[in-house]
Image 1 (cartoon, one colour):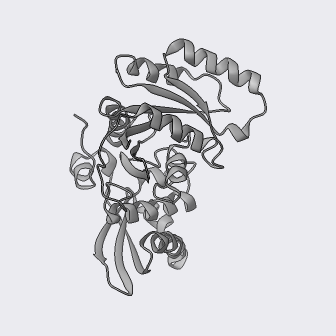
Image 2: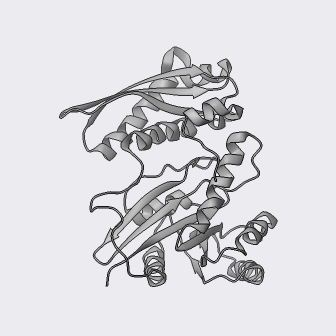
Length: 296
């Protein structure tokens, strides 16, 4: 009996949602970073095996947005819970009960979709008595369908969780053909790989102010040619991205090219540029042009 369905992954920033998705898919597809707002768009990864197809929605971290972009990010994440078959609500094992998490759960109470509480980063703790107390507080605040402890980074208990997810799904068709790994085009994933390297190598306000888009994407048999633009909000940020004698831009491009080649399975020629669009995160014109739209 073949099963299929849609599962959304929600939670605060930096609880390991993208790391979990990559572990399930057994390849790097979603970018990861220790900086908030790493994931900005709802991003689907498609899991296939002999008896199931699960479409996982990796969502942006839910937080109190201060910019128009930040508000879009949180609303986009919460809007997915009404349209899926199961919700995975991730928290960090090392955190005490967070008031903000309780507030998020209050917003889920009117939703009929079942919710699993996933305690991630189980490998980082030793005080399991404190963890049990925190879990009890969460269970008092919401009627979870199940509670699971995992380490997305190491893969601990991820296969067991997958089996329990399948048990929740109904018999259904394949929504995507074999071989499809995402509903996003290659160009989107490439842009994200480049942005990830900016997050890795820059600090302070720069990562939050960055957007990447492709000016040219030319796949060829032997090499794919890519011309990408890194957008920032201020001239000072442009100086940081470019670096002395272009050193930072070269470093970002070199690291991104390796990930892109692994993803495309062919050689890549990557050319990077940087430009300034002042305060783009608060300007509707740029948000729409960069693919951000208000949730319905």
